[in-house]
Image (tube, rainbow, N blue to C red; front, side, top):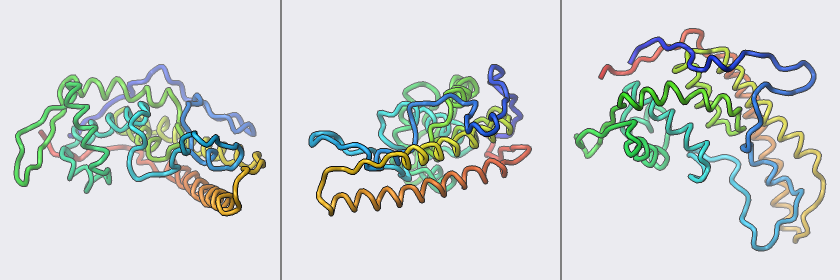
Length: 243
């Protein structure tokens, strides 16, 4: 696939962050890094669920519709670029089969992708449908409008869709800067929380040291995302196999 696509989000205006305020032009979403859940600021009830994991190499809880949506759109764009099997998605894009196989099923069920007959070694290729192509081009901007989630993987996928599908490098770069700011805001909020959990020292120290480790990871992620925002290609191209 090789095509030039204009921005599909004319309603989004480019604006700059107000100096000294730390505020981003992107709306705050319900997402965010899970660091605060580990900060030790609140006592959890005995029957409450454990806080979500702060980082995974696959898509988090399938109930999170937003993260599932960005993955589905990203996989659909990769299919159009010629990466069409779970194996290829893992080797070429680093996406785990545990995440992409359910995504491919959703895309086929929704009519946005179609399956070919299983080939060698049982690998099944997928093709984007006309409705799937329209879906990508009309839906990617919703991820940008919703604002960064603070999940670095999800925000990177959304930014790359803005760049490669929307053809808008500036919008993608601003979105990534907003993602870094959201992570840093979560760090600032965590530092303001000092209450200790009422629990045995073993558990308290585990919670405390894990929170420190998560802070280090979050700081590194924020710095990395900022660096990425400055390194996006000026003229995105797609070098997929022709279909």
